Image (tube, rainbow, N blue to C red):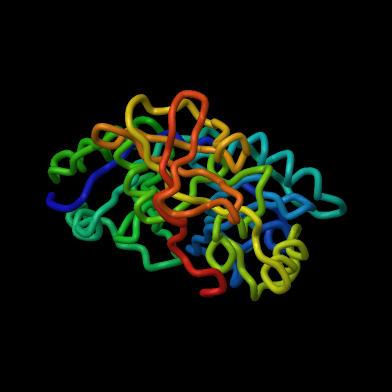
Amino acid sequence: MESVFGYEYEPTAHLLVTDEDAADFLQSQFTNDLRPFEEGRSTYGLWLDVKGKVVADSFVLCEGEERFRILSEASAATALVEKLERHIIADDVEIEVLPAGRAIALVGVSAEAVLQALGFAVPREGAFVQTEGVSIFRGRRSLVANFELWAESEAVASRLKARLLEQSVEFVTQDRVHAVRIAAGIPSVPVEIGPADLPGEGALVGDAVSLQKGCYLGQEVVSRMYNVGSPQRALYRMAGSGVVPVCPVVLYMGAKKVGELRSAFSVGDGWQGVAILKTRFAVVGEVLAYDAGSAEVECLFSAVQEGSK
């Protein structure tokens, strides 16, 4: 089908969190508001440490007030479990690590039409639907319509892919998917913003991080930066020619270290990627050096204005 593509991947984390204190416990740890704890609610956000640094990201699917499913494409299950278990004190909470399953991202202006053609309900923003062993929720890959179709098994994923191919959905490479995401200014966690970084350095406050919900781990640091300070570092889109660098690589302005290229993907005859740079040295059009070449600062990497929620 025109103006839509698919991308098949294996999530890195699939956790099931249950028991009578599950809702309140997750609410105290997650950066976005999980309330109301209603079945069918889908919420994207971050998991921070006590210093406000980014441990992981995920979608949280509420299957009932005492049952939540945590899915992440790139954040490790071990990191999530370690973070959560460290903060369980007297809570009645059970955390189970489950097989990751398979997933397909469906991206493009015709994505909703494809779902409808398959007989699937189209989830509204902030919700998910489950049908035929597939959980469907809106993703974070593009500024146009995009959905994550998480299948509970390889067999379900294979059947789903076959049906999408029948709808003339083209399946693309990882580089293509990341090119769309980078063009939209959506950072990848934990590669581009991770354990050494604050959410504000990736322009995630107000989007992946709520400024309205109650207390959660790391909130004080996030609020302080938002209200009285400004990030000394930020993400920028970079471009280069030649061989795609193996990241991370240190970036220099002359002899001075000014940042780090966190990701790079093939685009045309060159590559495009994301770097975290000291803002006082980041100038659009500036060419920065690394050990095997150079890269140009294209623009500030941000799709969402902070405080927009």
